[in-house]
Length: 567
Figure (cartoon, rainbow, N blue to C red):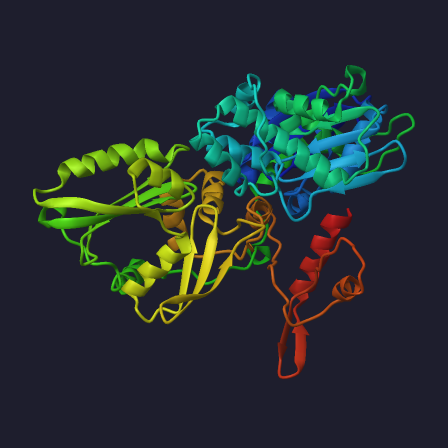
């Protein structure tokens, strides 16, 4: 078949893009869709629509993106490394570019092009990426587009950390509580993205000359682009126009198949019909090549009921509020995402409790609830005192006239030791933090908290529930009775998303592990004082009685991962 039309597919962590390109490099068709973790379905739908528009068309195609390594095998397409594709698009469509700033769903890149290729990319944290923007938008009860509209009318910029998508809430929530305008917070979030990208990636290497802004977030969010331009102090002529920035990597992937003047073809693929590609996208690989699963949490409803019954034995005793008399005691916890209240009598029995999301204003729901609670107290009962704790403890103390505010860890220990007097360890998972308390003789003997990462906390779970288009209730239900749970690791809230995608769509058998007792060449280099970027990838090894053994599948999957990095 004659080579005349070329298709580039870019399957990222949150979106799927395609670009149909003519032999002269002209863009014929492009699509950009959020896939919501349904990658194969989204891709097959996009290809079906393309096939309807171009019946019987055969194309030379290639694929790239963080979620495409396994798909390249399924579709029978060559895999083009993302940076290679981006460089190709820039070289062909905007050769005057000196520096390119690209933001994706979970990654951020700076490409220095004018004096040899230099790539700077985020590694251990996805703060400042598209998913970070989505998280912050949800905090302001809007979406990314709504965040952009708000930012257009800002008057004040506030300092907001962007190293972690959840920890940033520590800055945003107090500002919301203090009445900061949503417009100002939206612009401040964009500014945090700018500072994270420039400070975290450029590392002092100046961004100057002709600068291009690429990727979906920078294309669809002009206010974010404006914050970059203002911070870098770029003149209008220094900003490279790139009208199809959201499709840029898909364009570069297609262009890698095209012979152009001064730009030879970088990949090769015999033409295939669009209908064939769509059908391949619908067909999953062999079941034996899918991600290994963990044991289910519960085999059935009966096991779950036994678990709940066993763990309810140490619950606080409860009494009806109507039976209350004498002095009562109120405890209030204003957390990062929720507000809780408990009313107890002098014996420690719980009379009533309340739990709600704070919606960015913890007192808005708490005060009406407490007013109704006071009105419902039986004759002869009264609230003698109250104690507040949590992120908003001082706010609650001022609003309620509480005599004191308890440190959160102390409150945990008091409750745990009352319910389980011989407790030695207390684990607390909150909206954006996690705590482990060692207890000894009713006192705190040690405290461990999450510091640089919020993976595993409540907001972490909510993020993934939303990515699967599930409510938290449906998410929990699905998790409790899942037949084949997958080992995904748990480092960064956003980066773990790529492992979810990998397990769902590509089928490579992998696991995240920690090696506390073993060394490596990388470790030896670090101990010698060298400051290097590092990582450890290898086939799984099982050791017993002085013997080590590896599985063929482990070696093959290691090669797949390495190929994804190298090509």
